[in-house]
Length: 253
Image: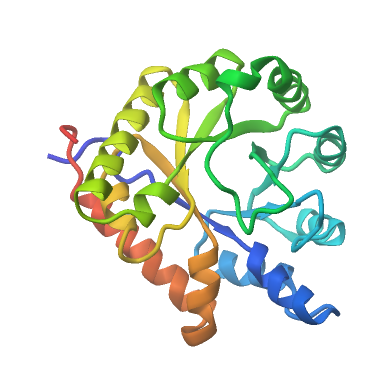
């Protein structure tokens, strides 16, 4: 029997790497805003953009245009810095996802150490929430990190799926169990739980069958695949796989 929550699974499309391609040559093309509008047309539920401190892909102008023209909610990924806090408070996106950020990394590597940085993170969480911005923390599927996120007042967490994607065989199954246990703990704590990082056609279904997850944020794979078949096609296929897997989920997962 299907669980009553089984149909609730949103897709957020991360458009960062449209900006990566643009910035490789300079100029204004391809425009991340156009990608966001195409994603909206294809049925995405939200748009994610990571404004990094070094502005390696998404720019301040991109955030301004997205806030001005999007009808979908914008999820602003950001480091816990005063600069990023001020930008978020100025634009007031629907949500802000605080992520770890190191200048030398190619992409976000692992989740926040919320447990070890509770004193530093708490003021950022509080100020964002006071401004009416829903706050998410990007963390590994670790019991102590999840409990710490709940303790400092996060509205939701995004569990890091990158390790699950990178592994194979028994190692992947073990990581999938960590995601399942983490998602169920979030539901127990009344934390909304999302998933993201590295998910693709081959890996999304097993995670989509885990009922507590309400949203997946996927970017690099969708943008890369879109080079060959178009963004609308990739989004439609991803959504189909997500919903097909969710329809098979049961309350016993």
